Length: 329
Image (tube, rainbow, N blue to C red):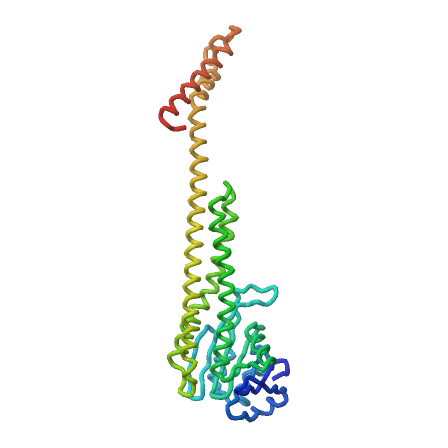
């Protein structure tokens, strides 16, 4: 495994202080950990030799190692005799990336060790390193896992709040949308709905994984954190429900905009029909005169054109009166 595969490693004491480890130390084996402390090793799972290090140095079973280093995993939790693996997802806040392209983070947790793996940087781990720098690191493996999961949920919540504002803006704009401008508004709504669907695809399984995590934590796990874990699960449930609610609101907006477009089209077609109805008798008269069979009446009269124009005007006026009487216009 190359040195670039290791992102950071710390021995974290119960008082929140931490001692960093260099790659050379971890390459030869896991260091001894003081009583009450735990080891955090953070790896780039795209790095060379990650699987070999997990098996040969960390002592993780090959099947578990495959779970930790496989591409495209869904959020899930799996329990084993020595510990458990937990796969979660966090929003992608890296530059030039779509937040909906959620980043997978994998945990391997035992009584005194946490191994985390990710492909791209996550703000949640920046928070952990900042806490370590301040001497305020999580005091136990349970505290660590929950803190990271809470930071992941916090940033998902921020994304939800931003999308809720976008949905409210679209709802307000639909009330005053100009004729012919609904397509751009529908495009905005479609983009948000697509993003919601992509986020919801991962948050649904993440909700289930956290629920299983609460109910099936191993015996060595600190029971004091169960209430906190349950609160995190409830928060994730609310986020999923909020995603569903926003998708429904976008769907309602889309239906309203389609109704507006349909009404505009029907109104246009109606007026075209009315205009066609007005000109149909006139066209008939002018067409009848235009066939010129047996000569056009009043051809030699200086008042012939005026007479025809008056007749057409009378027909038009009668049609307008009739359409108004029938409440067609």
